[in-house]
Length: 329
Image 1 (cartoon, rainbow, N blue to C red):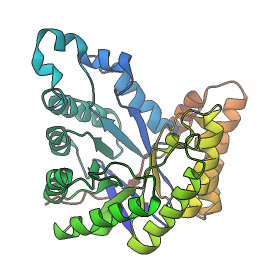
Image 2: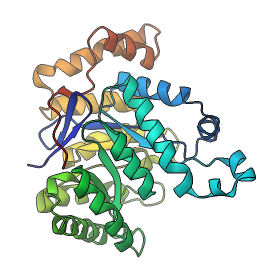
Image 3: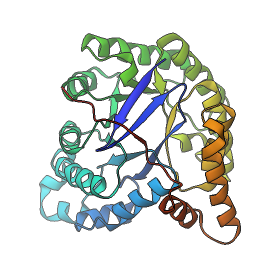
Image 4: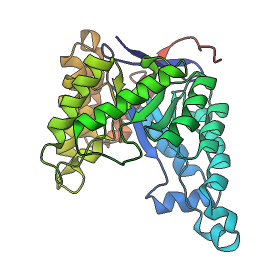
């Protein structure tokens, strides 16, 4: 059974088939968040810090840190700011340093810029997850040496130089290629977390069934853990959270072991907690009982974030399991 080990300064999270579903908080991402990008451009990290604390309180076990900001005002006066290779590396270093100063959970270093990935890996304490490598030849040659050098696991996205295929067999073949190429670098399969790419159900009626089939194959044939952008399934549809909340337990039952998602949404988190219980990944129902107290507090008028933060302060929240840091080569 694949066990992908992530670590912060003092806590360990294991992604695995016999482990609770790993929730990777997605909110620290300026892409598409103009207000956040403007704050970062001005050197204001207050929203980032607030998002980090809130996501962990609501149940994120890992935090994705994306540095893809566009600094529009600086770009107008200094053309260097039009280049992500100039903007993202120092921003990633600052983001990682600030986040791990206030929360003790593993991080997921997320960028398309190699310099930003390197800075994130150098700054992160413990053993972060790297996001991501694809089947594109150039990307494989850029990212896999970093994965090997820093001894970290990596998200492998199932697209290559031909783009994203609607054919699930092609996406499986791309994932298999990445696992094989990683092995050439001495990177074991348990350090590859495959994203099989979730398509919107509104654009492709078979999107859900495709993912469930792919996840089973990835588990059974390649023995790798999996992740996805969970909200992609409901893109363009009304009442998206209901769709997401149905999709996640079905994906878990198929063998998916993690998702990059918004943990501040109660309905999705309730579905995941219940799925953990039903999959026997919640010993004696302890996590469900603690979560039920949060639901009760929401029923009494608190927001999900407020109730989660109070439960965490009272000792009911866990950002990971205590564990020793693993040495990085």
